[in-house]
Length: 73
Length: 145
Image 1: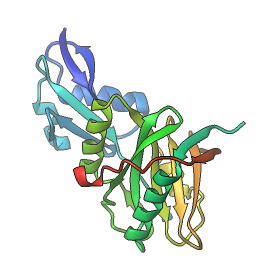
Image 2: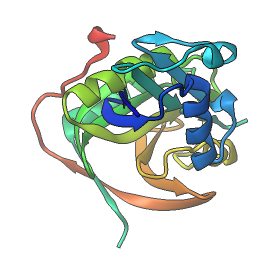
Image 3: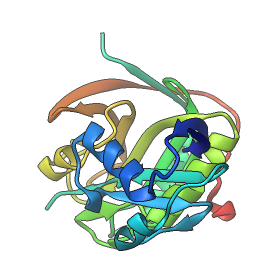
Image 4: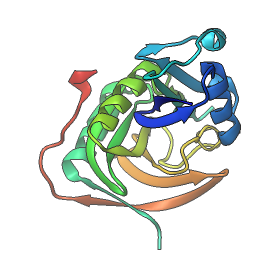
């Protein structure tokens, strides 16, 4: 296991976990699709199609936030 | 008993001022603090720049939340305006409400500004009590974004 931070809180994940896998697990929990989330790694927003290319390492700071929006139509 | 969201008159004035500035487009922003009690208002850009829809700019959202987390606060409310319709969640507001743990504050500018708070969860709208207390000047973080 390695220790990272997710939304500023410490968290342990298995070594070799990709950013894509971490985000996919979260989206599964909230039952939403990948188009509804913004993901940043160590302060940089990561495009959706690049999430799988990032293998997490100890000390990584991950942030993910669901979109906040709405409208009358 | 409805849930309560407490904020100062100065916070509410800042929210309304932001909504007026952005009209005729919908305005949006965040409120942080402790559960049920606002301590800071954060104005954000509407990525859609639309009179009928809003999306809090994701970069603003991240920038605000980093400061909220760093301060040991939490997200208390998400606000947006309805420039020409009542202060009640639209069907799209409900469909796109992904934060059941926070209040949704809607400011209508149709007539005199009117703000109302709701919980929106699982497709259900629960009106909440918006308690406005006399208070200090707002701490608005717009300049820091």
